[in-house]
Image 1 (tube, rainbow, N blue to C red):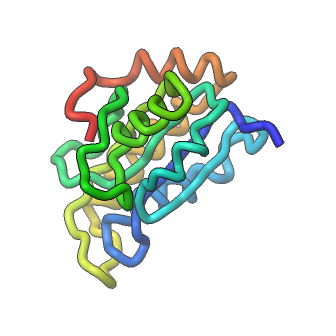
Image 2: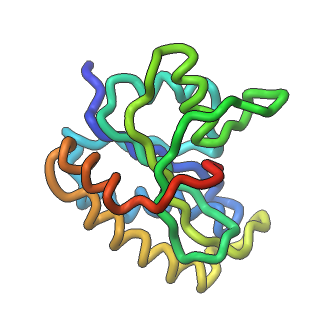
Length: 166
């Protein structure tokens, strides 16, 4: 089976309050995206095995909760070395670095980080995170209009300057 051109890879634990933002965004998008063009994957954290999910993609968007202040941020990623002593949890940039070392240049990749405030086990999504999720969902819906090649160009235009690639 051929890979779908666009991969949305969300990380987060639905049992840890605002850490559920990534999975919840994919749930909100599910009815609005073309399943022939977009594959959605949800996991608690990125692992080295996810590098296989990046193969043959035209665009990859990682989605995760963030403790930073903005309601959401869309950032272009560049591959980075995995600096951890373990590969049990990687940053999106480190996963791109793993991909590069195994397969060559990774597909264009971005991080959609959504601001969260409370990450305790058993907590519900905070009101601030709910508002941030609504804004990020509108952004993602606008971004995911059009053909995959147009999406990559649109993503590049909307992304903020590359930063810490966290």
